Amino acid sequence: MAKWLENYGKLVTCVAGRIYDVVVDLRKTSPTYLRWSAAILSDNNRRQMYIPPNCGHGFYTLGDRNTVVYCQGGVYQPATERDLLWFDPFVNVYWPLETSQPPVLSDKDRSAPCLDENEVQVKSTQRKIP
Image 1 (cartoon, rainbow, N blue to C red):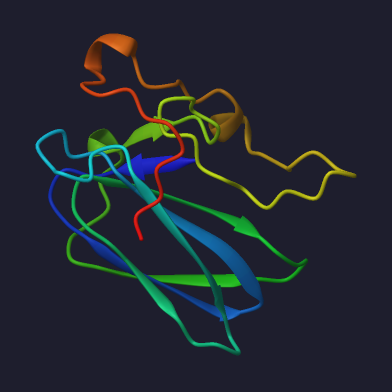
Image 2: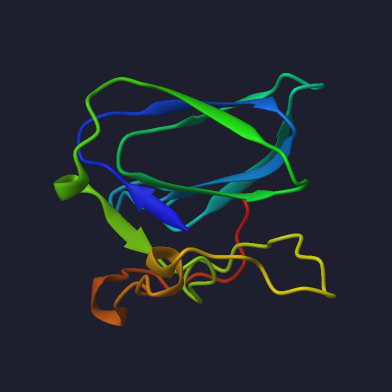
């Protein structure tokens, strides 16, 4: 689900279709550490989501044909990326899944780890940023 980068933020736009977009605060010194916020981004509502540096990001598609564009403040470097399991219990993001079908995940997303208990400073219960 979530990937966070060392040095830059990014602006996410859905230019075709609809997605449920999530940002997770993974900055240990932040007052909103492990909290998350979500919004529906679509070509109709033209909303965008800003993902600050060192925060996680993931999205769930709400249709069959979606195009998502990133405007980011740096060059993508896979070595600085870290994956996080989309249903990590420390973060506890709400995902609007269709109960009739499991989500389609890449092998990379399916095998992503959860946060380690030792690296989590405050255990989270579903804490959404207002």
